[in-house]
Image (cartoon, rainbow, N blue to C red; front, side, top):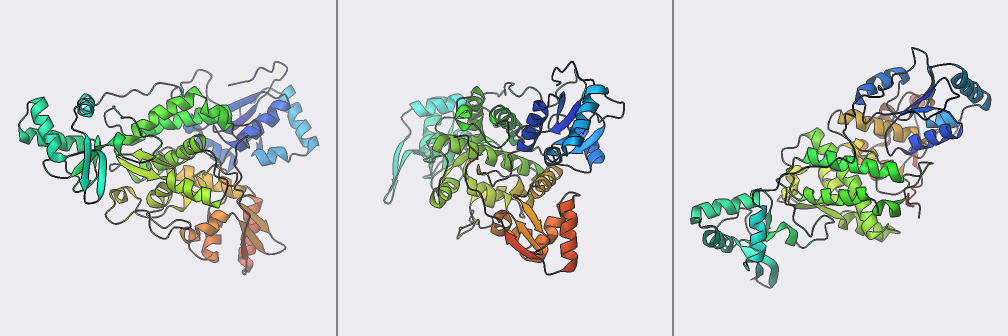
Length: 483
């Protein structure tokens, strides 16, 4: 936890989270000053989050203390007067850590998150061997319905016949097994009803569903896994990937090195297991954390697999094409953002809602739009919020902290008191309906989600006078890649 600086008596405490560009910048600056840094990961030590908020009045990271002297966030650190900074460095050099210094975890305290590179165990599904036998049986072939030919498919009747012959069961039990294969998401209907029993409905195994999902092409042989458990394992891999490949200034990511990492290889193995997770039992909080994490992970996977979109048309195709097979259904980036997290609303440049009334994915959608998700989703561009990961526990506070951090940055919000103008990120223009639909409601939303700061006081002064102009900042679509 501590760097080895024997000449220093005190310490600098930095409360941070992995993958946070501002945290990386702050720690790089402190390292160049030769200061002993105690880096406290609030993702691991969530028990300290409330106390840090009480000490600082802020829920964003980083938060920086020189011994017991509160300095502020990264911007505050970078803007310190040279004389003041010199006095703070002298404080650390000559004075030991006082009793009223902010709390840090004990050196040997257990890691609540567990090892980031720990193995994710899964139990082989009871039907996995049967699926392998079915693939070798000759039952799977081509079927025509009208002018369409469905390759790698079979009918419910053909499956039941095969089960009766090969497994020695009667037709009733064979029908029950066939239905279990559908419920456990080993296969999907291509035509007709979702029930798999005797009949002409055509089915395919999940690995044969013709789509470009980045986690398809092989079978997920694990028993159905709780979405939250799998999301936690994927979250750990992304944390590790970003911690290892974010630049020292926190501004760029070395995606090329990331694609060659063993952690990314492990991530891809875990992503296959998304095919058969159970989604319908998720609570609102679990759904938010799961799909935000999956969206951000899918963007990374898509960029590594296909390269970065460089123009408007490529971006449109990227967000409507890059997808995962999740719980037996295909979800693109647009489906996750606008279908699930925005309560099935039309997205930018979309003519229709993502899910029709008969789409099974509609059952997964949140009942209402959640505006805070816009500050948690990272599209891989420099104009997007920094990537973070989320957990169901206290998800609303985590999302509020993300919004506060976004608005704290001038890329998200700028106040021009002279012109009586508030300049906001294009995100607020594209999704204005999510924030109330009018300039007045939008400004009220922004004010309510700002942390206590000079910027918030300036906004309050403008709003109290009325006739505040709202404009939008240019959006930086360039990538955060080092290439």
